[in-house]
Image (cartoon, rainbow, N blue to C red; front, side, top):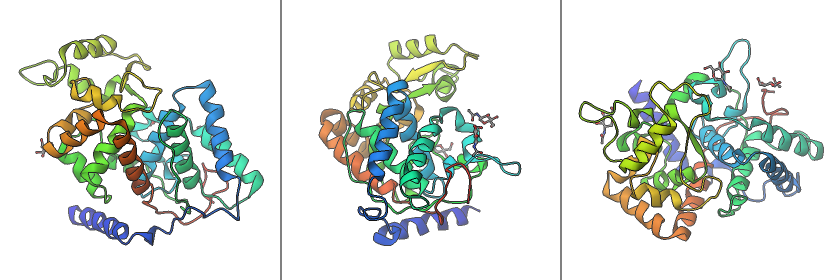
Length: 317
Ligand SMILES: *[C@@H]1O[C@H](CO)[C@@H](O)[C@H](O)[C@H]1NC(C)=O
Ligand SMILES: *[C@@H]1O[C@H](CO)[C@@H](O)[C@H](O)[C@H]1NC(C)=O
Ligand SMILES: *[C@@H]1O[C@H](CO)[C@@H](O)[C@H](O)[C@H]1NC(C)=O
């Protein structure tokens, strides 16, 4: 099993090194669906007006999609009578806003039926979510295909908020992503909210010596404990991942360096010199962070895997 996973990891890596093997291009829909990007942006913008958590949700959804079977829209599929889909797997607590992709897809289908994949719509929506939150804009390579497989059990392959640095690195490198990609993409936490359950391990019964993770700035730990008392059952309780959760900026790295990060997997970035140096660079220079983030997003979102164009993003054709 271990060997199969390792072999799969290097196959992805090889595909990656081969570059254009992903078959994506910037002008993919120029002739077949020229208004695509406009339609997706419209759907994202409209949803953001009513719900400021939409950008974080879309970014998270794209990330989740790409980490399981490549960016093939598998995260968008509904469960069926015979199959529990990824979106109903254990970490589903952080997934919402699927309706935004549905609205974009409906608008796109009305203009160019059966041409544009749901995986591409999600990649564009994630870019728009970042850009419309004050972050960088970039051209998204397109031409992904939608997959037909979505299994709840595969969500175990996602990097967990409790991961340490070696677990994070392994998860990223299996997908051809480097340490720089890991640190830059962690910066995506600049948008977003964490439920208590995802950082409970750091603020209650941390270890035999301490109730809270000693790497946390104590007043910050106290603040999180107040929001999330032990045995907390309140569904919506939790914390933003940086103080400016609706704005895409480098504040995440600034607070990270001060012991005010929420997840074990955030704090883990400070445990190896190379990652720590990158986090410091991104904290000091927002433009460097944006450049690195865009580069890593394009790399991650080029992990392709599907084979069809769905008509409804929630069901296979
Ligand atoms: C997919 O699931 C959602 C939520 O359970 C439901 O509202 C929707 O109708 C389903 N869509 C399809 C096409 O099955
Ligand atoms: C999350 O997954 C569970 C099964 O693990 C399911 O019962 C629940 O409906 C899902 N929640 C959402 C919001 O999709
Ligand atoms: C990370 O966790 C794994 C699994 O618990 C462990 O084997 C490994 O030694 C840990 N690595 C570090 C750097 O703590």
